[in-house]
Amino acid sequence: MATINDNYLKLKAGYLFPEIGRRVNAFAAANPDAPIIRLGIGDVTEPLPEACRTAMIKAVEDMGDRSTFKGYGPEQGYGWLREAIATHDFQARGCDISADEIFVSDGSKCDCGNILDIFGNNNTIAVTDPVYPVYVDTNVMAGHTGEASDRGEYGGLIYLPISAENHFTAEIPSQKVDLIYLCFPNNPTGATATREHLADWVNYARANGSIIFFDAAYEAFITDPSLPHSIYEIEGARECAIEFRSFSKNAGFTGTRCALTVVPKTLKGKAADGSDVELWGLWNRRQSTKFNGVSYIVQRGAEAVYSPAGKAQTRALIDFYMENARIIREQLTSAGIQVYGGVNAPYVWVKTPHGLSSWDFFDKLLHTCNVVGTPGSGFGAAGEGYFRISAFNSRDNVNEAMRRIVEKFKS
Ligand code: MLT
Image (cartoon, rainbow, N blue to C red):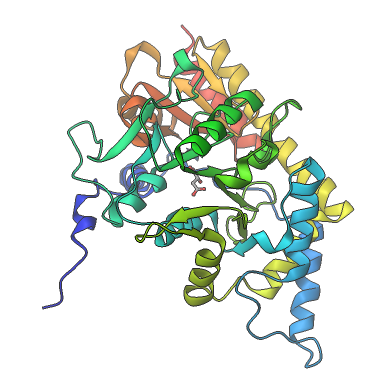
């Protein structure tokens, strides 16, 4: 009989969001009339910007004409989209990133996992705690960890705790690590990194020959102009960082699928024979072999994000969700609940009231308010006692969810 990848057996019960889905479905089956409002998974609810839809309709027409029809596209993405990204997302912010260092893909979640293909199996890996679970689970699947402890921590990974005490930004490790995952604005805590904090990481990585995986999927939600949007705004980052970005949250592409990964040509890793090897070439080889690119139609939609109309419409979308975040923060605070995040990020990180555990608060909210959020402990042991509320929903749903919570918890 064929054998399996036993590393999958080390994974805990399930990926957090399917687990939440199971609990909510069970509740809904038992209470079919309950008006459930989902503020759990960070999935967008508002329609795609008109500029993107118009561009995609035009692209569909292109596919209906022999002279403009497209078959396989470049695995790295069409040049016009890569140029637009390089110009607007990076060069406009002073980052020295060129179009051919940008790889268009169908999602940051996929890329965060796939990137491990080009790294060795004996790297020391650091993640924050709490953390976006994909960083951890993909390393478990790849056999980079031992078993999970009772606390849910995998042997072999270095966990860097983040909490209110350190403003949800990890201390620079005292030991040497090879791969570091950073996410700013942070999922799940909504925290941000200052230029100085990122510079400390870049300096650490360069001193130790480490690579930083920088997840900037939520950069568009930054409202404070002093905060960096890209790690390449920090000098030296071209020598030590790969950045992941997405159209999912800024332009509502969670169902449409388009993202990008930046691999600077100056990045290097060590081969077994001790020689230095360019990571760009390895990622290019990996993508050309295992990926056939994002559809022409979707890439045209993504390109439209950078048109004047697209910029105005995505700005309006982001502002809409950030107003939701403001309402969530304000309402929960008025009910005496301590909140963090939600100012430069679409996630509000809530201290569970009355000392409730994360899952107890989840159950209480579901059963008494019919509101779904995400238990902090699902993001790691240090997330226990916290709870994440997503600002991605309609205004009516956010207002109604907050009304129910305030009514229940205002003492
Ligand atoms: C989340 O809720 O954390 C996000 O939706 C996950 C994702 O973007 O993959």
